[in-house]
Length: 129
Image 1 (cartoon, one colour):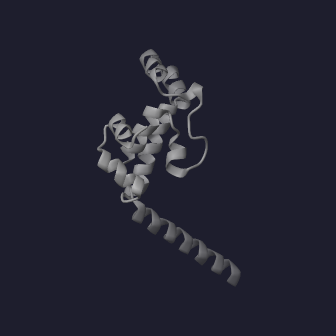
Image 2: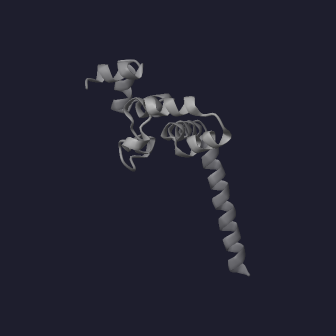
Image 3: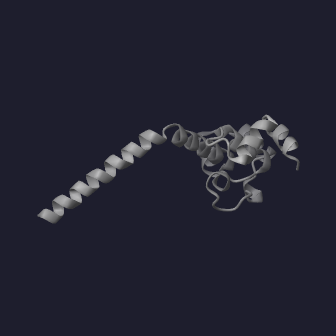
């Protein structure tokens, strides 16, 4: 598929897609990854981390079957089942989590540094005992 057609299918500018492909966009919008995942039944795990299978298994594809399930949700049990088994839902959650991590990278790094510092201090205290 041509880059231009791919961008049009995702409803993004071809120039924006080109910048992502060339690595000129350090943190492309999470919405782009979510659109790719939903449009082409691609795993967000694969898109974001390069792990797992690229394509979702046939039973987990998000197409019309997911929309049919949403229309059939009538009880809490139905909703819980959908949330546990829906690749669409899992992809949306992964997208939000990725966006949160990207937008708060400095806060997360500081928190991890503080945690590691406390761990080192505790280890040093135990060694002195």
